[in-house]
Image (cartoon, rainbow, N blue to C red; front, top):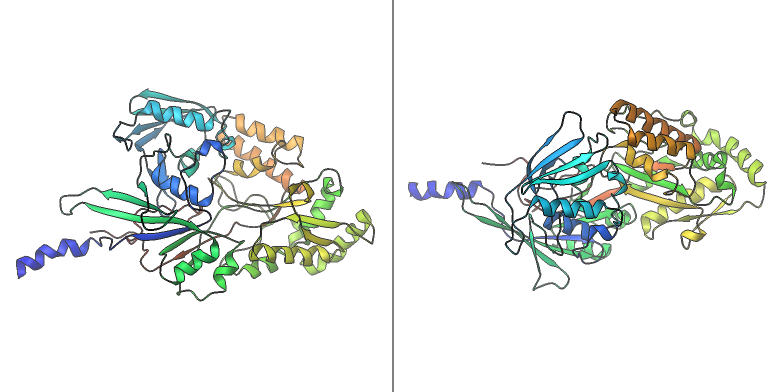
Length: 481
């Protein structure tokens, strides 16, 4: 009996998964999409990031860990990243080589690519295979955030419809549109080989929430502010609604240069009239706060941005001044209707209501725009792929934004070209200050990303990138034997 008991101890200690984990991502059924052909939907990004790892990838907490590369080295001047490719094979048994990896990355970052991260990788000078297992990324200027970009699903290494894991996909035989992901976990001296399975599917938000409540889904991913109220209106298990501390942009960008929105004073008036506190409170997200600057706290090598002077005056006390500006610019009545391009959904309705109240206090009528061509403002709701300030400011350069400032572009271009990191940070700060002063962006708060996490899922953690690996979902964070 003692011998039998001792033999059972390792098996009980290793917390082996008890079955397939069902994961639903809000959206259409996931498919393996080519990241060089355009932006990925949320289900496609989850699938791609789990079946076609990049040189590096994120763990559950958003930390950088090895992917295809088993190790890497950065030169002292920050201009060279050298990666050693692990001994890995494609699904058909062929060896993965550095030459293949270099060719795939050059295609994704090349001139014909429509990858949304291409502009962010503008400092990449060349990608070269040095040997069959060593690839070098050469930069024109140092980029300490390069690894975070390489870990994004958009930089996953995919050849045709094949990736290198960590999961292998097969169509589900039981659920139409779902994909069964399988990962073989290597055996060690004291553990037998195990297999991890995840059933990945996409569904509309209401269906995803209902599947979770019914116990058919263990994890729901891909929630945004747009559909958050739908999760808050139903009775969920305690602690299952979880939020990422997401970094990025959430606010309004002006779309018209042929009316009063081409006037910085008018844009500042609209920005200062927004009741951020009321809108944030309506979302009910713990720790979420209003934001009045383009940059946020925690960006690489930058101090926290200072609050604009006008934020020191309560909204109720600044309305009279803002109303007088509106009357001077637009006349006392009738003022034009302001049309805002927003997604559909109850969260977006909360935002429309908040803008209606805020700008209505100045005498404006606010409506949802039918399309971009008829809109005065559009919502930007994007999670930052790294903690670099460059990603924030480059959204508003001429060519990317309708309303822009040529002098700001000069600062942005100089920041990209400089070899001196401190000079780069200073130039980015100056560019951000100009964007704030000209109100080329009307910040409101941080992006909202939420998930539903069942008790079976122990390996889930929120992170600033709102990217969630599907590996070790049933393994508790930090556990081991």
